[in-house]
Image (cartoon, rainbow, N blue to C red; front, side, top):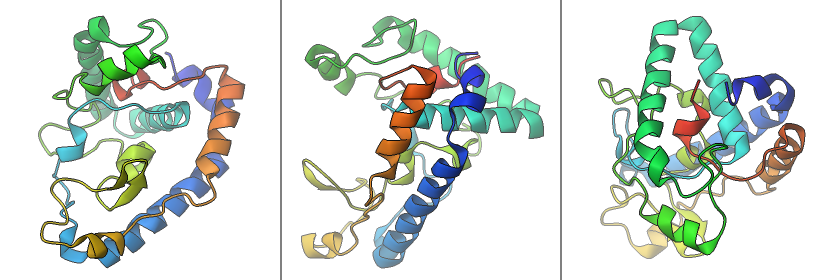
Length: 209
């Protein structure tokens, strides 16, 4: 197991729980301000299709969630693992990084390749029947902030399904500030130091057995 062996020693449980509480509270606040402009609902899988990068804190959180699911519902956990293996089999040959370690390349060529990498690939944690995330409580930070307006280098970004008819001012008023004190960066530094793994990976690799 790639990540299961590192969960006990490398996962900052209390710190990550604090981070999740901060981010989830920010999401709830943004959702209140957004009202009907926010189209996110159970079963909406727009943000579950297409591969995206996750950091090692995300990867350990996912893996920890999978290990817990194995204890409570082995059948559902086995389905997640199966989908992860099938997904990695499809993605491995074109993976823009180290296939053995699952770490994405950080050079310009790898970054450009990743921009168009597996845009139609469903997340292994997504149940294709229910349209729900099997590891919802352990999902990466990217998943937790998707939907409301979030600021990046390119300005405020929102899900293409959300904020139809809203003005730029109305969108800005709903901005989600998810981690104002940058707790995630400090926790990630701890994880990378303890686990001796640096760099981003993808969900399918993190969930491999």
